[in-house]
Length: 116
Length: 115
Image 1 (spheres, each protein chain N blue to C red):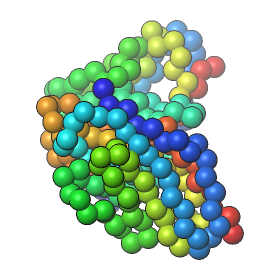
Image 2 (cartoon, each protein chain N blue to C red):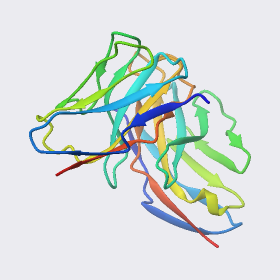
Image 3 (cartoon, chains in turn cyan, purple):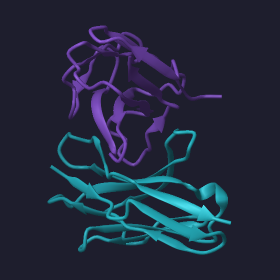
């Protein structure tokens, strides 16, 4: 079974600065998808960014980008120019693209605090 | 606006009672999911449904039951057999089970507490 590890339970960043959240995963598969979700205090989960394992280019969405290292099984999220609204719990998630078990496996999350 | 509606937002259960959490979506999605979230934990999959009249157990299905009689609706029943039901429950949907790069859309959640 796949596992997702987020080694930083909590992180903090100053407004306008850059922060990187770590995620590693364990899998024997070669085809899969990776996601970062954000859960603000309102508790609704929102997709931040996604990455297909077969794509070497790192995904980017405005101020959010990933550093995908397939060999190292690492998928970190970089938030540039941090804003107060970025404060939330961030979850890394893995989804297999092989076989028929396509369920999402989540890490335990990283709580990000943004200081004004 | 399209989305997922979960109700109620807060729910209290007496020991020995079954309770049902509602989840409705108007996104025309085939697949729906129920997750449980505990403090310091990620989301864990309880049940999922790929299509109407079909559902499968997830990783922690014991003490829970679901039905999928309509495409829009996927209610979750927490039975008295679930010994530790206090948690935050999230419902989600996606276009279909096989659309792997498509995100799951989530509701606002229901917080269940034991009296």
